[in-house]
Length: 349
Image (cartoon, rainbow, N blue to C red):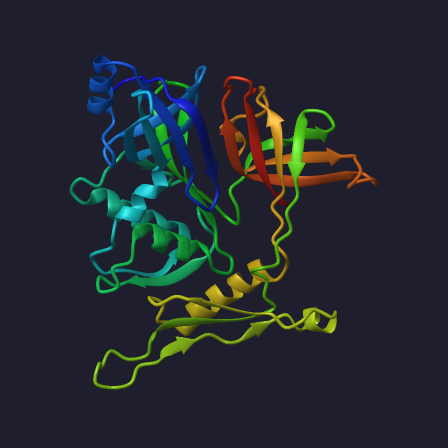
């Protein structure tokens, strides 16, 4: 609809969670105000970020805030989220049932359900070329009013689950912008040879957080209530209490974890959730991030790719040489007094 000058842009994209964009449009005159009013409608407008010929980000504008400063200058601040955020606004209002269906097919059916209803097609293509390796039973009741995004996340977050995201790119043949449901089992991967990153070198700085606040070595999950009779007492079904006794034997204190899945009615499915939650929580979370210059190696296509990271400094005095997968990307374009850079979020492989 328009190409607008957006200042102070930052944006990110991830595997496993919604990416975001923020920026500000300067509005120096009535003409620009009219352009912004016409082109930017929260909940209606798609926003794309391009760098040269490449498509770097795509999503939906959800918030627009015109404001003035003390001098009377008008600006419009924008908040947008990647296209998967649309499925946070879609509810399963019909009962959908799958019996021993490939988990990718269940995911695709959820996406298709959202697309096929009137007004529900925002152009997200569905990749039918892969299988998820695991057959599952799932029922999504219309009485649960579960959101499509939540249903996809729950389906993926079980033992032997998968990863999903809405990927954007420019079609090499047609030049058209594409948004596609990308599925990966057991993980989304991209590229063949790992990208080499070194500090000191093409890595400007790094951060290495280790967070045990969500750690657990025992876990139990709660599911749906065990009866539908409102006149009788109802109790949720409870998963098996899963644990890592070897952690306790190694000297760790007991750390209990729990989760709620109020639409899960089958104990086997609830146990799959509990096992997967415990596996994610058994160790302190470590998602290192590195900031690097934007060059030919660093593009949005790097999400899911392997990198080989080498660090030699005071903290890694013996040298670090390890393989990681890129699970997220945060980009800060060039601004006054600041060079463009990308922060990569890494997961050990």
